Every structure is written in C-alpha cells, then in structure tokens.
Image (cartoon, rainbow, N blue to C red; front, side, top):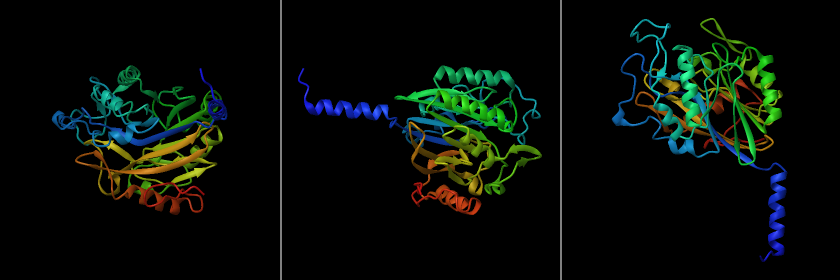
Length: 343
C-alpha cells in the first residue's frame, strides 16, 4: 500500500472534522397534512388523479430529515362521536391506511400526531396509525411521553411533538414538556420540537404575547412555550395549528416558526384568501445545534388542496411582514427569494 504524506494529512483533517462535531443536518419541515378523509363521503382524491403530494414530492425528499404534522389518523375503520352521521359541517379526519405509503414515498422521517384531530375516531385509530408508521419506518410523537429518534451520519436527532389538548404531550404543562426536552437533549445531539397550538383563522396571523384561546379552549402561550423549550435544550421549534402564516424568529441562535400553515389538506379545509399559502421550511444546523442557514420554499394549494411550488413566493412575503409587525426588532427577516438574513 502506497501511503503518501498527502493521504495522511487528508485522513487527519477528516478525523478532526468528525471529532469537532462539524457534521451538518438539513431539515425540511411542513405544517398541516390531511390527504383526504373518509368522513363524510366524497372527500378522497380520485385514484386516477394520483397522490396530492406528487407535484411537490422532490422538494420533500431533498433533505436529511423531512417532517410535518399529520392532521388526523390513518385508519380504515372506526366511528366518531363528534358528529352526526354524514354531517358535512363537522370536521373530523380519517385517512385511508394506504396513504401511509404516500407519506413514506414522499420522504417523511418524522410526523407529529399531537393535534386536535388525532382522536377524532378514538384510541383504536390512534393505535392503528402508530402501527402503520412504525411499519413504514416513519418516526412519530404524539401520545404522552412519546418521541422518536434517528441518526444522520454521526448526528443523533430526537423529535417530540406537543399539543394543548387530547391524548398528547401537553404544551400547557410546560414543566413536564421542558423536562422531556431536557432529557432528550442529554441523549441526543439535536432536539426538534413540533407544537400544534394557537388560535385559528385569518385573525390568528397576528402573534400575541399571551395565552391563546379558540372557542374558549386554551391553545397555549406560543412565544413563551417556544422560548422555554429552547432554554431547555431544543434546537428547532416548528409550529402549526392556526392554518395561516405567522411570524418567525431566531431566538438564542435557534429557529422558531410560529406557524407553517396548511401544506397538503385535501377537501375539508378552508383555503380561501391567505389560507391557501404554506411552505416547506428548510433549516440547516451543525451537530451542536448552531444555525447555518434557513429558507422558506413557498407553496400554494390548488384544486381542493393539492400543494404546488408558488413561484410568486407569497408565503415569504407574508412571514417577513408579519415578523416585522409582530416581533419588532427581533423577528426573522427574509430576502425576496426566501433566504433567512442572519444578523
């Protein structure tokens, strides 16, 4: 074997990089996903038209880790006590189990099951969804105490999801949430936090610095929760639930997205006005959690909720203006092309 001086130098440079924790992880995250619901009849995309994710799939796959919020369950049976039979004015979501394969093919590594629709069809459908995601190799977090982990090269990554109600890790019990994040931070290089919370609708684009409510239900103090989770060891906060854009912030060098809005929500969601705009948020970090870069890839839902890349980048403009207005002096700023301006 002919080992040259240059070979030895290159070996030690590579070894030094590995030991110094300079490996990077590129994440792509989306907000609410509901691929079509059994209830009521008529809200599944016709099979001959293909997956609603087919036009956006390459952008989801182009990452080390892809994650989002699964708004509802993957379950072919079950009944709900929330609605009258065949009511079209009641919103409950139960997706065909085979749609799990669509999520896998689209590159999802982690999915949040911590939201206000996961329990629409009872615990049996929650269990079935967890089993399906396990069989597909998709990590999930939702029920109390649950989290998921993976490795990207030499980097260990944990994912944990919270919501303000139901059978979920609670975002209202901030002490327990912080304790869970601290434990995950001790055992992993990076901790990614998903939180489904805040009020809903166009008025909820304004981010308050207070507890939020929706129809009298407490939905959490999103700013305080996000800051506390980062103080406890989280490296990225990904919010969703309001179904519209919200401000973003870099807090102590960590990215906070207060609402990634609707991403792929077929048939049953109100997509009028700014509700139809969403995004794929890209965040690149070092193994030690230092933010390298971030950008917003703007999306728009058409044809009852099929996501496409938005060449007009309207979500970028919304987030940049909301960040200035709601978080003066500390809101994240983005270039017109969606790249984070790191101060």
